[in-house]
Image 1 (cartoon, rainbow, N blue to C red):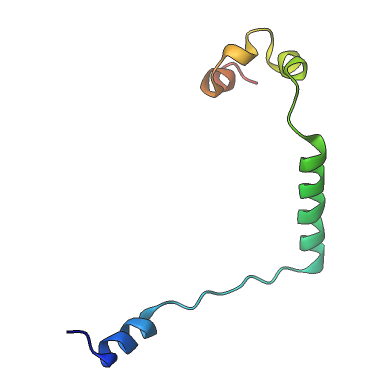
Image 2: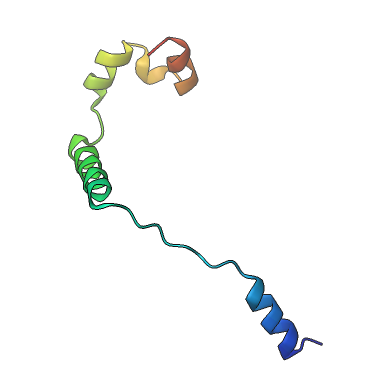
Length: 69
């Protein structure tokens, strides 16, 4: 049977989650990066071919990495 004492001990063992406080400049940098990421969007197939070549869409990410892209 479980007792109140056992429940109290179990609750006491949980680690307290610490929140991370970032400086205002860091928050601004993160926000700007997120804004640019959403602005860029997903590349078109034509843009993808320009970067990886005509076989780019058919290649796996491992093959692209091996090719030095």
